[in-house]
Length: 475
Ligand code: AMP
Ligand code: ZN
Image (tube, rainbow, N blue to C red; front, side, top):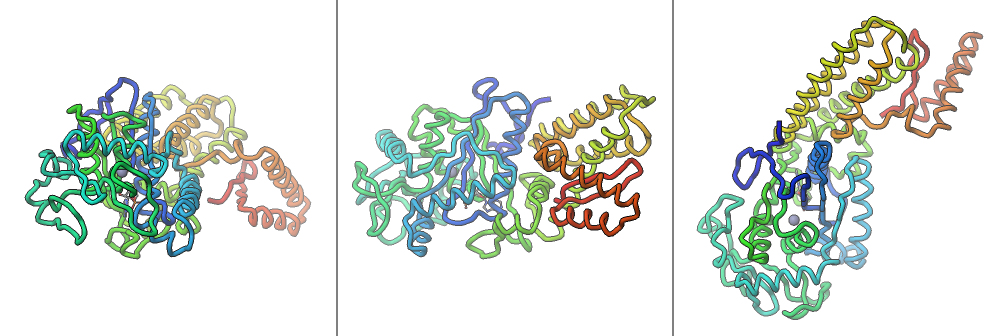
């Protein structure tokens, strides 16, 4: 049972074979840090984080690189509008990106390189492309020479004639061909610039990913990902640049993966369309786990529609998973004992579900199917809890391990509050629950209600059961 990925280079599902056994080099295009990122941008960050976790779960050593685009037209315009410098703007929104990404449970990359910190590498890459005969200088700009690159269009599956039909030369551009794209842009007044062999200027957008991926991952990498809108021109151009620079004849990337769009009212969510919800705002309205759950509830290549209803449904799904975990923890404390429960049958039922989970994740990381299996596990746990007064230690260990394992990949259940949160706080809650039980016994309902309400105002909900009072944190 090996991992199969849909490779956009061949438009086929292919068995994943890494270049170096046991290792995966993985580059994901990151955000342009001119503003808060929106919930559509969050989709690639979340789904490819899950693929990274899955690869690690399967024993690969993954080097995951995701860049910050910290210089481009949008950065320059926004900094100008705010009356701050481009580096100040970048600093601010890199910090904001990290805040939201952390809240969404997106693991930080191994390397998060910034374009402006790699100008020498970018210049060296451009020099190699020129030396290999695939780029030329024109009035301080440097352009990639499309006519010298017959493979152009092989990722987006379009031929040069069709692509030429949609391209045009803007006034002031010294291109030989309308499809030629800028590797280096000559300085314009008031814009940040760096010294280069072609005079002062700044890098084009695409070249940063070629220069930084080759610095950290080499000239031939395993996986490169991003949203489907990046396939053309960004990834097509990256591939042309990287292969033209290396001159090795090896492909830049072995597996190209692209996520489908997140839609709102059936339209792509985009800054330019003004129909976006920032991750920051979504996080004020919905629990982070619900947002992750929502993203993983569809296959990453399918479009997914963002709506209040779908987020509410996702929140209900998360609630069900978390209730299972807290019921399990509570039962482990109150109903752990001798029992005629058939542990070996239970173990084989869990094993069967484990196989199904693995099959789902190995099938182009089908997180929707994997979530389905997680719900089957929850159903099995809930049914066992319902049907048995007491359960043996092994039942609890097996069940907790199963939930922990699946959650280490999907990240939709969250930490086990009672055990991992601040111990002092847990002890205080337990003490208040005890005091409330005594107040109730003494028919002092004013005090017992007061305790319940004060815990509620701290986001702690109590549930009375025949075995005692359970508590959990509200989502
Ligand atoms: P950007 O900052 O615009 O370069 O976008 C960052 C990432 O978000 C890229 O991988 C884009 O392809 C992706 N992206 C942008 N809009 C959407 C959307 N509506 N749905 C899914 N992915 C998107
Ligand atoms: Zn890129």
